Image (cartoon, rainbow, N blue to C red; front, side, top):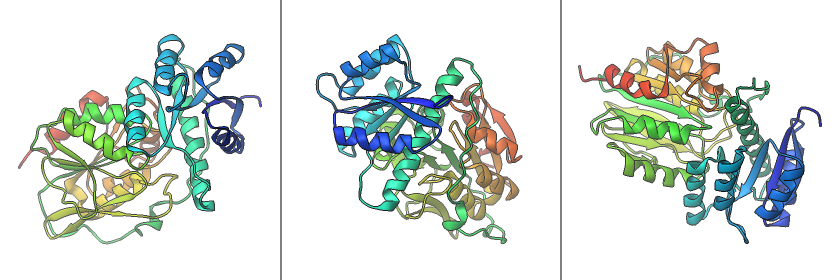
Length: 359
């Protein structure tokens, strides 16, 4: 298909290769140009036709996915989407793959229910499209417009309220959303904060269990305490909560105490957790005491929520195009006029620290 995103699928399971092929080919913007049972077969196929994106299993015989990934990135970089299991070993390997240059990570689809199959299709196809934009951006070629219609908005999780925020408080809260390229961006961002920084709640689009490993890794690198959010966790100074994969996370408040509610629900703007859900709840319960930030990522998740935060009096920031891996989510927020400041990644933390100094 002309102008389609060409995909090579690498997985040692014939069933998985067939399933992934069916899912990818169901999207008119994507085309599977080949499948391979191991990296050696993949390398031979790449000689005859170079793919735009590779989907790669990390646990394979002959040559493991990480070794193959390192070879790709050192010899001829091509965007790679990691398809991983949900085992403890799989999550650690998947995070290592992101460090080695993989663009996205998703879990292997399971044929359990119609809803799960449809959500897997959305996540896989969106991940491949996001990966293709990273390649084009790196080569300074204008990225093609990809029209993605959101499945739901935040109304399905938290209906819009016309009331103002709760009783006055001076305690600050930072709400952050990120997607493609966000693991690296969040690492840079969080490492810049001192241990007594205001409490944060963060949505990084990432599969379940991977968020726990990601939070644990950040906790080792940062002065703040970083953990995967659990229902009813208190949002306090010195703590950053990462929304668990596959669960929506909302900021709530009881008196002067901020806490999070973690819950199930449909995909919102094609994601669970959704940045829009976090931002709407932050607008409602923190109002002008919050700072909202959107970092690198494809799509529009978070844009409308950031506008709600700004309208509630929060200070709103997005990462600038030059420092983004994909300038989708920040750009959508700019289009909605939801943004007070557009900053390079390395300047965001400093701005937030100034905004949230103790009065």
